[in-house]
Image 1 (spheres, one colour):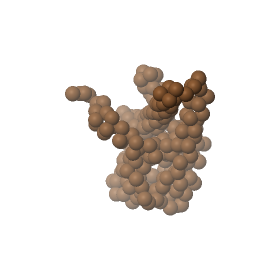
Image 2 (spheres, one colour; image 1 turned 30 degrees about the horizontal axis):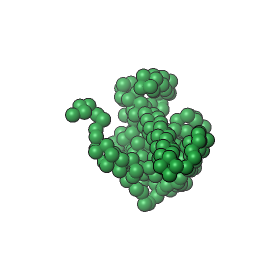
Image 3 (cartoon, rainbow, N blue to C red; image 1 turned 120 degrees about the vertical axis):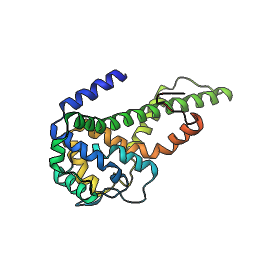
Image 4 (tube, rainbow, N blue to C red; image 1 turned 90 degrees about the horizontal axis):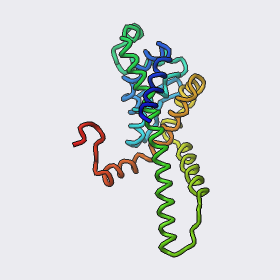
Length: 227
């Protein structure tokens, strides 16, 4: 699975226009500022208060992808860099090495893919857990329990659909809805689907994921070295 995902990412990077890669470099530098709600477009701030920790971390990861095809993108990004005193402009982006801009674009597309798929599989596992608990309870109570594949499918669809429609201070802002989202869907529907899913669905489940990591996995680290 990892080799397939890596191959898809490498192909995605190779096919991306050079200007998109250069903009990705700037957007990556602006992501921490975006997560604090300090970036604006002509339609107002990108994120309104209050912002939970889960939302801020999600925006920090997905802002570059969400802003990749913003309306009047080049002018908007350069304006953001001037506002934040980032200290680089269009000429600096053009002089960036191919390896640097390739890595910037890779860092832009990996979070939507990784977060989106991770959450989707986590929800499916949650459905399996709920089904197993209900089945065990039925057996303990000596209730008749047949095969209920439809129940798992219905619960999975409900969880995914519910998560995909939840709002927050970022996706509900006029700046995102009017200036960022339309261009992304028009130019890169697959990236738009992954980014939209992540921005809507990841923040509500953040607290549960944190609890599971601390209480169930005992803060286990999945980075080398493991011990």
